[in-house]
Image 1 (cartoon, helix red, strand yellow):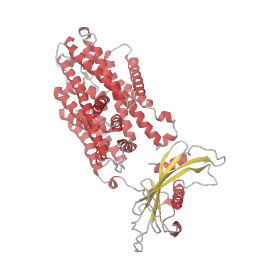
Image 2 (cartoon, one colour; image 1 turned 180 degrees about the vertical axis):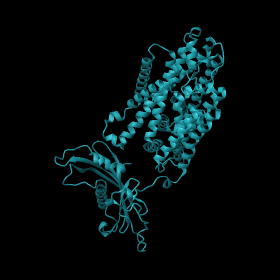
Image 3 (cartoon, helix red, strand yellow; image 1 turned 90 degrees about the horizontal axis):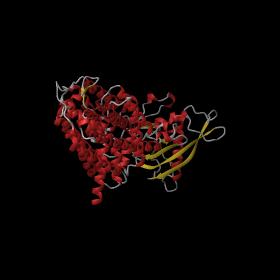
Image 4 (cartoon, helix red, strand yellow; image 1 turned 135 degrees about the vertical axis):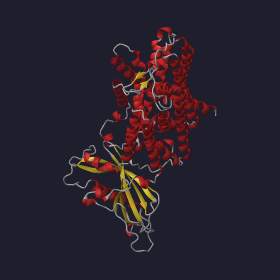
Length: 609
């Protein structure tokens, strides 16, 4: 029990710091500047509760999972469907984190050659993320984060004890402020923070690692949410204090006419540095830097973990073309984040422009993920991706217009649209959301099959005409060959001879090739497809006159090899057997092994899982 409690404490510090990215850290200052203590609490409480609910939710998913099914397998299934969304979410999170520290800490210092300084700052942040990410894997990062959190506590105490050494600024004239609607901001904040953790690779990786270590996910996230709340509370109260000292005069008017105060504390400490304790500004700067780098190192580890899994699966055509080391490295994505941050700084953007994405664009995806994964850890995950993307973009535009023009109705509408539609899509039947078959009109004229097989009744009913079936069709990325077993398929005792299953798979594979590559001519081809390996696992036996369906699709491929998977089922969709086969490709004239031809990649892609 003691060991489990200590693990929860260690993991709690890592959860808190990995969630203290630029958005929460600096927007706590802005929300407090706009709405005072009410703003601070209404921002910090939903943020902390949303983080805890993610931990409680993933713990519930873990408990509901079937025997032999782990939280990681549940996540990997979803991440294969939402891979681009997860990576885009992480890209925006890391970009705004680099942006926030650079713009709200280093840019206000007004040092010589600011353009070069900011570039060097971004390079330094990236380098620190790479070093810490490589030094501490996910299993060890909880210890480094526990150390960093202890340093944060020490710095926070020092700042609070020494803050009275700063001289107040005489208040002259009116203090800058915004005529903003509180609810117009509170609702997007609540939506963003209640759904946000579910698309964060860093949080999923932590929950999965906790399950592997047999640590209470709920307990660790309870600790983490409280520690995270303490960070926001400290930063918000520090904001209230500097405002009492006249720091509100440092608020800046942005390009949209709204006043921003994320760098107010930095400007206040540096502007009064001659009258402050010598180490006070540096202590505050250290506080900010630690909060940021402990998000960046977590992001490095999480992105690397995510990319390694998906490149290993080999389900994207790019995986067979680009070098594997490049595809699995987080460095290109981090460099892109650094460039994005510098461009945003040059354009005089603010943190809120990134924030709108989390309250709108990602919400539909998050709602579907939350509802379906909590209801059933292994659901059918077919999704109308184009519709979801369109809804997400529409909500982003509405909320963006509402923010820029300070129209709370638009801001709230843009936020609630993805919540309502995402919830609606998540609770609909799968057959209503995405079609499971390919339409005949999309196929070549000489390759049109019955895509919706006729009603199949159990063999042996004796009712003529009720057992008619479509012999070949495409169903949910499976190429299906349906037929009836006959006497020639059976052995002396009446059940299907074991060798026939491989024969059936072989015949279906040839039909599949004929469908995918209708122009293939053995006399003219530059390549041949050879079988590298074949395996099959028997499940149930079939008998004479049973209706058999052999299904084949592309499981994965890389530069050299393609793997097909097959399933053999009966008329009741009971599994008779399943397996895989590996294919290689050779030149037709020399028989030398070659890369998968481009025309084969193009033909296989529609059948790739």
